[in-house]
Image (cartoon, rainbow, N blue to C red; front, top):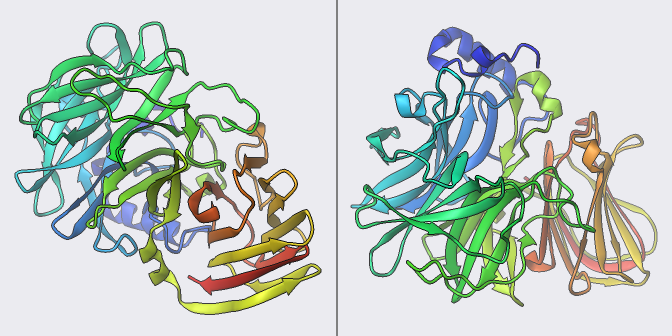
Length: 487
């Protein structure tokens, strides 16, 4: 990465000749580990999902994008649309960082519908000659051609007193009375993380309300990507705190993402009574999630299947990362449950395996590179079972369950070349609240997403095996309904 000087990271795409960029796209399209059905960048780096919104029959989903390499540089917003949350259409770069207020990148933000038009609010990243950051929050609207027009000058031009330059990622929503609110991730001057609120009657002129008071006054040094919404008479705050120390099975990644669930937030007083912070995903690669309401009222979440400050094997091919599959959120027993949206059954191509199975020894059920697998009605005759996927003599990603402790573990120590982030370990474990009875697994060329007990626990992980590692092997004494589909 030595070639990524400051100048190289902040070079605009417009500096690159079209034929050079087209050749770059073609080379990356043919590189290893490209995804089959996940949203991925055409070139360069993808990170946070942004502006996720449903309007007039279409889902709009943007993502942070640096087009010229697998590093964090001059960020654009790249635009994808869908009618069904399954098939996504490439609309190209929608938000271009070409104004003074976002001269060093269009950082993360959210989408909202006002006057029957999709609007966004995002953080403009500007640095001065001394490389001091000056963030601002900018409103814009989506044109019919898929590009975003900015409403300048910025709606929130500066950081309020008491906070550092780490002040970003606005999420806009409207209450029942029509008042607009915006929650922003922030760092206090004492270098602790928090979230603050603004209020507006027109979503253009904003008034600072203050800081959200929670039970976590000293919980990491920065809260990124906050998202407040209400579900089943509860108020839920998602955010990604940075600087949390590992604790048992929890907080094992470089940075975490999770939620508080409690009573509805009382606005504009910012009164919030909530329960303990819980992680959203116990896997290796999940960060900066964002939600929206589906056409039928479901709350849908998408996350970045990656993490900041971590190298991945695809870096050598000048691209990095993807978004997770969309997940439907529900509340059960005081916790968020996440299930893959029901529309994803449309990805199924061929049924590879579908039968009631009585297993007494290790068995290769099938071979597949890109597939969905579901175990249901699981009944164990021994304390443990193991599922190896994308397996060969040299490689395997191992999923195991211990019935005596109700602990489920993912081991990617043999998941392929250059396993990422080994400094943070090669296993992840979750303690289930009930015996494992159902498992659903989505496997793409370089990822797995695991859903346990109808969404009680969820894990996302990048894996980088050879294309020839395709065995699906189940070990242990059990009975279960097993279905495997090519995708």
